[in-house]
Figure (cartoon, rainbow, N blue to C red):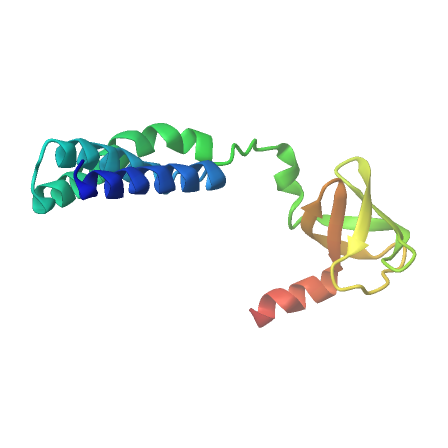
Length: 153
């Protein structure tokens, strides 16, 4: 049996193994190209033909299959109405102290657990701006500090 047949079989096996190990759809295309090149080598095709088949089939497989697999690779993000809270103004109802940990704010008709984004203690009654959400906690900044931070940018 031709030595290139073994080379292409090894390339097929290694790229299939790498794909199975990563599951990132980065090397499966090379398995398809190497498999076609294996048949070409077995049929006695020249090395140039084998290489062109390998490259051509790998590219064609990527172009043909990649769009179909995008929906499996791309994370499925479900939008929620919670995004509307970002940047909103809230009133502190329980002192926010990341060291204890304690703190709550009232926003949109609900009381939310809150933490300070910079670790500062925020007194009850202060106005804060929502910087981000982490789970069901609002990460907030004192309203005056939030406005100054926006001007610095």
